[in-house]
Length: 218
Ligand SMILES: C[S@@+](CC[C@H](N)C(=O)[O-])C[C@H]1O[C@@H](n2cnc3c(N)ncnc32)[C@H](O)[C@@H]1O
Image (cartoon, rainbow, N blue to C red; front, side, top):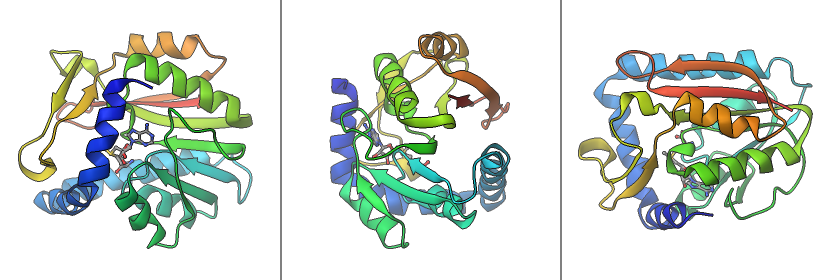
């Protein structure tokens, strides 16, 4: 794993409690936008998970506050949430979610899954981390299993990566590493694995192109 990701998870380990309270405040700033974002994501999950067997095993990497794992569970899937930071693990366990402490770049997946979901986590991965995790997810998925992840689109940035501590609602008192991916970067990385791109979307930001969203199929 990269030293960039290692340093970033150390920040989350110390500051996850701030992230949890600040992200709730963030959603209150523009509740209509927040609920639209939520609806879009839930629709994406519903449509792409519709081909999975009933009660299929699903794993989430970097669950944060657990909202997405909880939603996936509400659809009847057998979900395992995970994160590296103890405060996040507690937050998901408190919602009744099966949760493990799991560093996606270091630890082995405990079982095989029909789907793996990884939302807003590639932001903290270098390009080498991204190849490593995509290959590792491929190896642990069942045949026809799917991998859903998103990354921030390099097109909307004028840099490849940065260390940031956002002001305002995402302030954490320490910088985290952010990497930005072009569609070409990700397509090239995916081509090095045996995954097929099942679906691809752009969403978010002022021009609906902030996030590159991939649904890969084994
Ligand atoms: C921006 S937060 C997103 C949280 C959640 N997925 C969401 O969308 O609200 C990034 C998350 O990635 C997790 N993360 C970063 N590097 C990780 C790694 N190597 N293994 C597992 N989780 C990681 C962090 O602990 C944090 O929960």
